[in-house]
Amino acid sequence: MINCVIVDDEPLAREGLADYVKEVDFLQLAATCENPLEVINVMDQHQIDLIFLDIQMPKMNGIDFLRSVQYSPMVIITTAYPSYALEGFQLNVMDYLLKPITFDRFFKSANKARDYHRLLAKSVAADSQKSEPKADYFFIKCGSKYEKIFFEDILFVEGMQNYVTIYTRKGKYITLLNLKNLEQNLDSRSFIRVHKSYMVSVSKIEGIEGNEIFIQSHLIPISRNYREQVIEQVVSRKLLDKNRGLL
Image (cartoon, rainbow, N blue to C red):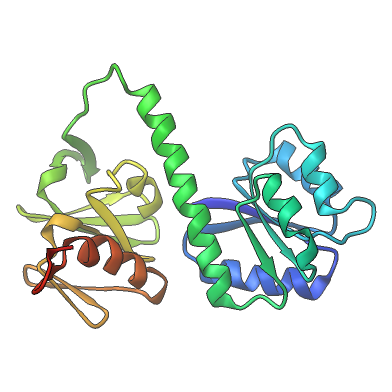
């Protein structure tokens, strides 16, 4: 999950962006702020990964805020003024959204932030685990028993509030765990989120039709927010073209 903050002096703009955030499974809204001075306090109290930042605001505008902080999270500018675009990108903003902002444009920008966030997380994980051998299994607690689960055996995972059901070649296992925590321990190259409640093993996918994935006798739904990513990662990179071979 990406913890984000909305900073805008217009109540309707904050409300509209907050509604968009609620529609995106991987975004978690930590706070909404009327000006950059408020977001500084939020950053002191919470781990913030992404700021949706307006430019023209009282007390301090968005550009001055970016110049004043030594460290800032990823930033996506949301403004009605295109004239700040160059200055914003010189300050390493992630994206520049012009109002009125459509959900489609918002979602593309959020995906860009997620890709960069994952890249940073992988880099940190690689640095911390260079000397550690990588395990190919983990344990979960099912009732009074600890079950050993090999990554290679996992077909898909279904989240149900505070529980997950892990479907494997040998059977299914239910444990007290949420899907977000499990996702953080699975290799994103081998496992992909396809729905708010489902993750699947890429290598176990046997076919995709419409908004459903086939894995053995199971049908797993693909949500609208994840369909483009699923097609790109699972199909497009391994698509055999009759004229050019494997793309």
